[in-house]
Image (tube, rainbow, N blue to C red; front, top):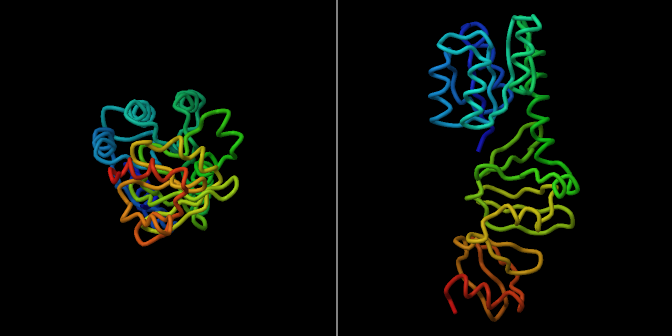
Length: 247
């Protein structure tokens, strides 16, 4: 799934620039709205991964008030766009903890770099080292999704698409129906964030999604998942067969 950006901007010229930038960078466009009411409706319909929002917008609420309302629904990261430079506006906006501020008028390069740095910052949080994960409890998976950096952009991947996990030292290789990804988190740590009802261990280095299992070959000690042969250890054999109700 594509990293999606919602635009909240009531000036058509700037809205067009934002839309072109989102398209150029290869992100998904979750829509453009120009007032607080439609923005809240958009959030309730589909939660984006990032919001580009003007502080001065149409509607009952300005962008700062809207940010607080949005965060009551979901903690979506926000980049504020404004032509206001006064301390009062800055202090009010800062309380909502935006990722970035972008001052109007801005050019294409400023816009692009601001968004790229913000997305890179989100990606850094997702790819923080094992020690940080173990001590501060940061979640790699949130709301059934995780983000994978592919070249210079993030891809949004659903947990439902996972076939199995494969340990690779302090990293984990995630095999999905759409491809495979290597992430900097151990399989054991990632496994703690997955539902034990949905995943089961077939081998010391493999964690398999239960409903993706096609068959179990007891002679060769392998579990077949979408055509992939996953090793099945003697230690895990009985537990796997019980989980599958095949024992």
